[in-house]
Image (tube, rainbow, N blue to C red; front, side, top):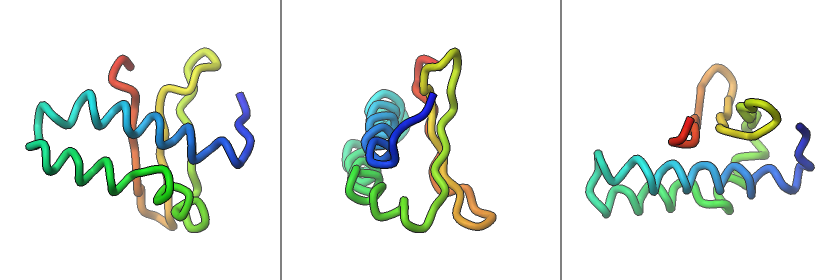
Length: 83
């Protein structure tokens, strides 16, 4: 499976938002959930693309997660809740 570079931030944002909305409310108050949604919105992911390597986890040709690396640091790692 290969995404075009322009599609990458859109797909990352989709995975991140779905995961945050499904999982975070069980552990964080609503203000914190909104903070994380704002922190990882599509525009900020587009900006991060310039300084991070973004990867996708793929199972049977379906994208099920995403992560990014900046140097030796894992910056963002999200797996869809159903996986």
